[in-house]
Length: 211
Image (cartoon, rainbow, N blue to C red; front, side):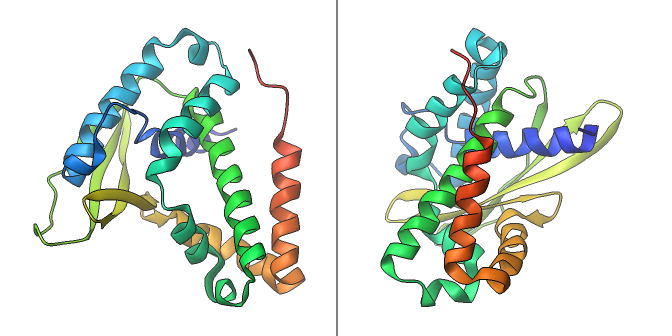
């Protein structure tokens, strides 16, 4: 894997690890404060957890499943990634798409959590009005000897709780990126074809996790 690919993989892992702290009351925080506090805690966990440092995929996945998933709006993310075909999907197909897309992201993020532990994150001032219900929290990943990489989080407020609905890495929306991939799958095999493709990808990625 190239250095660029490794950096992108780590950034995806950091996105998933963004809300990796059950003790943080997300619904009492402004979006930018949430990103700052939890990202700092996540990086601290990555640097200190011996199991994660040893490459424990199992431990990383447990952390993601227990702490991250409740703070991501996977239904909206999946619907956006599937595009217009989402409205044509039956409830059963929608459920399968959400579960498979979630599994795909969780596995990608969990594997990436162990990749990088010493990156420096620069948090940018939030440009939003108090009444906004959708905001973009901008950060930059500093690289030694290289240009910083932008890593922005798009969050939506429902009630008093902020939920992640997209991540934009180096100006590339991850939801849009997956939509482009899914478009070809939908053209080839429709909704069931996309579901089967996601199932196959998730099964092929399965491997005995380190204890």
